[in-house]
Image (cartoon, rainbow, N blue to C red):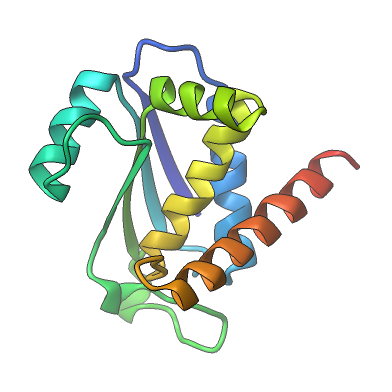
Length: 157
């Protein structure tokens, strides 16, 4: 699994942990080991610009996910590898540590915990999950909680 991370946020972040939680989520979801993912950490100004340009939102958001062609994603072991063994490009996850820090303070946990949650949230979006409808939200958030719990358990052993 190829995961690239770039921290352009100006904030110190444990990028190894962000990579580890992304890899855990992808492994648990049975994503093809040849898959490629990009994670970008950005400042508030750039996240505000991205949110406005791509989502029509005002102000910064915590996470954005930009999936590649969903037809190229191998969602599990029952599917064969892409033709020619080429890696599947899952897409990009963009995180904003400053927004995550504010949300973490409100939620009563660490910024690192919030970034891990947002990373898993972004991975699930790249895999086609959404939370626009109540049933979709219940499914996505339950899966997100399960993935975070199993990742935390694996780290404490």
